[in-house]
Image (cartoon, rainbow, N blue to C red; front, side, top):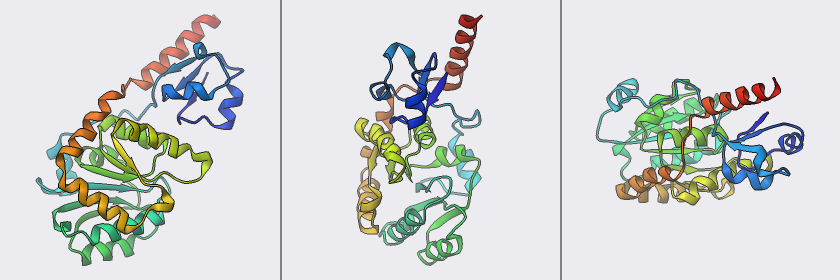
Length: 248
């Protein structure tokens, strides 16, 4: 049995799919990209850590020492960080007229920390900077909007927390992230900005629109209802047990 996290299967899984008994998928749309009968596939979703569960908002606010009543933005450039996302996001946010209404959680990776700190402090923006944050459940629970890449795990986490997002897919690796991002864009839960088109001006415009329209953010949250959020770990475990019984 193998599991494909992305909507566009990688070369290894496309090859192995012919030889395994079962192919577990995060997205039902992936079936059409595999050279196997649909009956060999099962949609399980993408398993997340047990800790990745919603935290009560007051507790999440206290974790970051944030105040209620402000607009909270989560910025994350993936496991290694992204210098482009770091620089464009900080510049766009610092230029917003309503920046004093913001509280920013910025996970930058192991670069740019001092430069980002200077930008946010100079602009008078309440913020928390991290090179890495393991307790992501607090960030997802308190955020009103995420600006992030579109890796398979990130998509599963956004889905888990029904978090509206501006997605900037990593432009390489066979466009896996672009395919993932389009899934959320197609249901109305996210907007996609291509990496090559990401500028401070473009991002500022998107942020101004979303901050001025809470009804749009609410609609983006509701859009996640169109995607079932299964117990991925439980479903995967059950499939393994089923295969074991068949083998026995």
